[in-house]
Image 1 (tube, rainbow, N blue to C red):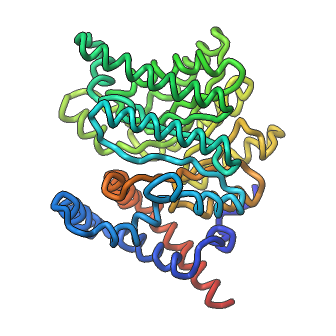
Image 2 (cartoon, rainbow, N blue to C red):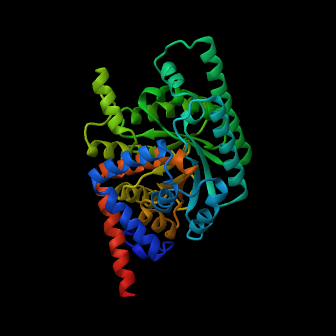
Image 3 (cartoon, rainbow, N blue to C red):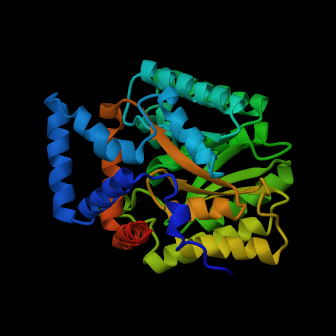
Amino acid sequence: MEKIFDDTQVAFALKTDTELERAYFLFKLIANQPLVRIGTAVTNFAIKAHLPVEGLIRATVFDHFCGGVNEIDCLPVVDKMFTKGVSSVLDYSVEGKEAEAQFDAALQMTLKTIEFATERDAISFAVFKPTGFGRFELYEKLGANIKLTDSEQLEWDKVISRFDTVCKSAYDNGIALLIDGEESWMQDAADKLVTDMMRKYNKERAVVFNTLQMYRHDRLEYLKNLHEIAQREGFHIGMKLVRGAYMEKEIKRAEEKGYPSPICPTKEATDQNFDAAVVYMAEHLDRMAIFAGTHNESSSYKLMEIMNQNGISRSDQRIWFGQLYGMSDNISFNLAQHGYNVAKYLPFGPVRDVMPYLIRRAEENTSVAGQTNRELTLIKSERARRKLN
């Protein structure tokens, strides 16, 4: 398999020299764990104290990792990436809301992104988080088989209605819909609800996509069991495969509550679990569609090799590669250059509301030193290449 991810000219073709320098500055900061901790604390304090820091945040970390403050704001980024063959997934990244009005607002925003996607080839998927449509505690209680109160049941009925409304809109408009994964102790209830949506809307093809976080050692078995159900009942499976985003929280809760950790024992075990899921899905494309959400070059090459060996077209709509905006441009843009389906998650929302997302991005990059170092190495290579030219 040809190694394509070192081509920095393709990777950073859309970045100006100024944007490249900003990226270098940000990843240098992220590589320093004490600075990230201090910066996170200071930023949280400044926002809670309503200090005028939005301009600074917008000009640095926000503009690097986010598309804008609203969907219209994202369009220049969407259009620019699509000139290089990279599609967008508009992701309304406002987290931690608790009120019904806020859940209804998230629903309307998701419906709006579906509408946007119908009008633009550059937007290939819509996306939402389960807790964007309902309270975390409801999912948690249902997952633990705790009976809801009458008022909670009314709340849950609204959650089901929001899911159904957005899945029906995606189906009616021919847009694929990604539903993000969250913490394990709420995920069972979300999984059941998403599977119901697959039963209803994935009869002809995969419209509704759930998410498997493959740092959980039980997810491959879950996928195989779901496959049996899908074959028996006659629906398609859409699945976004990721390694996972809540590892430290998962391990800490398992220790505090005294139950076995759901997380794979090692990074290598997680990698093997992820790749095994990719292989399994690629072997069953008659019933499955894959959104491989990975920043791992080895896993990306593995999927490319599987496609090559099995004569699967690079443009087959049942296989997509996905990365986050602001990260792994060497994977995204080089894959697109070679004809693969690629989509970048493009977060957006008001600066203050998106800060929890941005802080998580910084903390995750800090904990995965290899990823940050790789980003820095690639940026340095491109800076050197541009100086020579």
